[in-house]
Image (cartoon, rainbow, N blue to C red; front, side, top):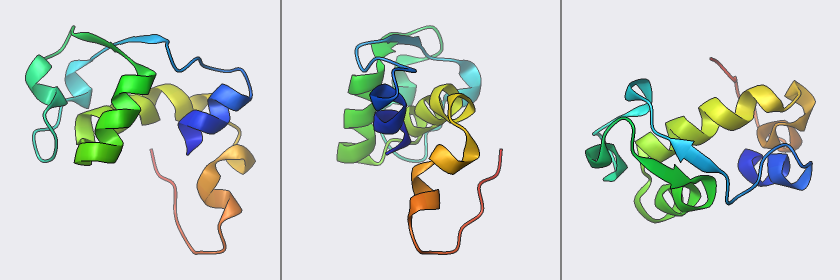
Amino acid sequence: MNLHKAAELGKVRLDQKVTLKQEWLDNQFGTVYQRGAGAQTTLEKLAGHVLRESDNTSANAINAIVNPLLALEQHALNKLDVRHTITD
C-alpha cells in the first residue's frame, strides 16, 4: 500500500528500475532471492511477487526504497484503526 501511495504522490514510478541488494535477500518466502544481489527488476514486478508469493525479498526492497520517502502520517498502516508499530 505504501508503494502505491508513494507513486500517487509522485515519489516513485512503478516502472522504476531496482537493483537488488544483498541485505534484501531472504529465502524464507518467495523466489526473488534466487536472482541474487545485483539483479534488476521494477517496483511493479516486485509488488507482484509480494502479492503472489508473499516474497520477502521483494517486500524488503519495496520497504527500503519507499518507506523513507513517506512521512510517518503518509504510511498506509497509519490510516487503519488497528494498533501497530513501525520499526526500521
